[in-house]
Length: 211
Image (cartoon, rainbow, N blue to C red; front, side, top):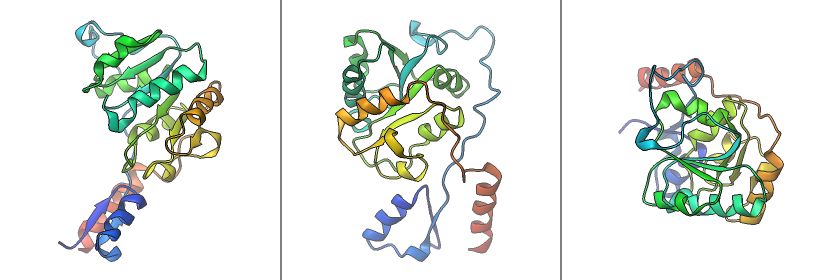
């Protein structure tokens, strides 16, 4: 094995902790590509009768509906926030039934790529309360690229793209996450810098050519 590529400095540090030499590991983060300008095919209907991606402003959770992604914590923080906005859960997983227990909640199911921009675009804020340590958290980078703010816990590689401030709170603090949701409403996020597609592709090609 000549080289390892990872998505974040967090992942690199985790490998170093188990004995992988730092010189073998290169950080090349992912980039956002293709979210703008993607229109759904004519006549595409929402799957399984679920809600369409376009709709009123909302709080959005986008990801696998499993405990590790913190979907329960997203629901709790939304409830505690006191916001009148509905919570939209976009994803599939073992906790899919949780959406049925929410007042003012919606379930979208798994969304194909051409629908993600519409789902994120209607959101006032994306909530990311990952219980595990996120290797990167690409959906947050996608949200920022569409000017949607992200309320998140400090988890794994998330601080490497998140702008910080009052919307990035201590891991596990649901009260702080609820406050971050309230603070995010009405904000317009700025796309994260340093994740240019051409630059990162050039870095990856150079890595292959030099090994």
